[in-house]
Length: 393
Image 1 (cartoon, rainbow, N blue to C red):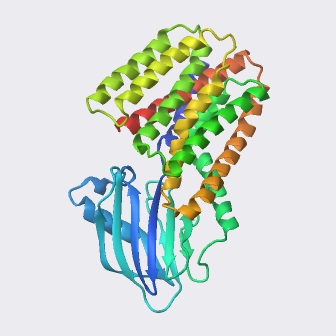
Image 2: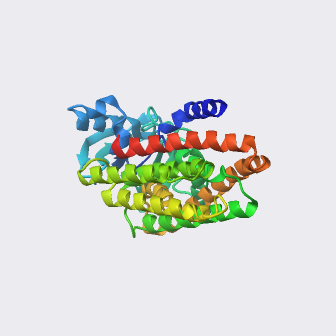
Image 3: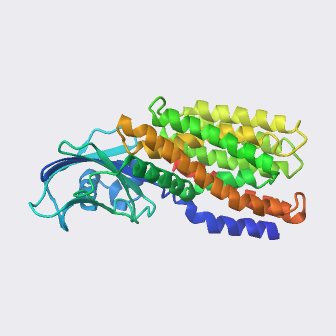
């Protein structure tokens, strides 16, 4: 009874994490003298959080919104629109707007953004500026740093830009409730330092591979499907925790496989955002994996493999955020390196905090079993919620 109450409490406390506010947008500014052409792109799913974004005048209302909340200013005076904003053709799941601006003759030019902060306080906006004959410059704007003065600060040095992406990677992993929940689920079973090293290495290698190939443009996964699969990976690892602590019957594996199989059939009929083949493959994998686990004597012995495989999925999620910046080719590799380094630093920080606390509790003790059961129940609930809301919401 105590464990069940703990699980319910954990789910209630973690509930706000279900609001996926780790959102991003981008803008490209082509500035000549005191005139500018701006193009801004946002995720349609993020925009749909506004009630007015689903009405008949959605396109016009969104144009007014982006022009009001993303501004070029001369001193403190917003530059006036001389044409637009108008909606451009966009890939599925995206909205893109473009407009022209004219600025007063006096005052230092700067960019201000509070896009989507009303519905996603953790929103990050990537601004890229090409000004006259100068090289392009980028900046990440957020609630903490909503403005960028262009005059006198044309661009950051290579080292400063790298450091900025390292900080961005750290902030991304620490602000991503889903990635943190996945790490927690992996660490709950405890184990020695060597076990944790294998887990971290597996997850790191997995997400680094897909982060690289996606950010460099070799693979272009569907973002909505990736986000849903991240939720599913969390639920499956948490379910494995519960199963390893029980009698290890085939009830849970068959339930998981059957549910995913039915969802695959519904996906083939056009329901949901995850392809039928993907769901069917995950169902078959889950069945085979649990069957293999029954032959392994030590709980968690195959965890490094799961960390690697699901790390591949999480890497695509990391890449989607970095790709929003629309960086030029010469800036992409340093940004990729810095962002990935930041993700690793944040991940190691989480492990350094969580693992000693879990390791301190004697494995197999009543307290340890209660912690695993309660923590896994909470993470399982979150994973199912994220999967359902992202795949079918």
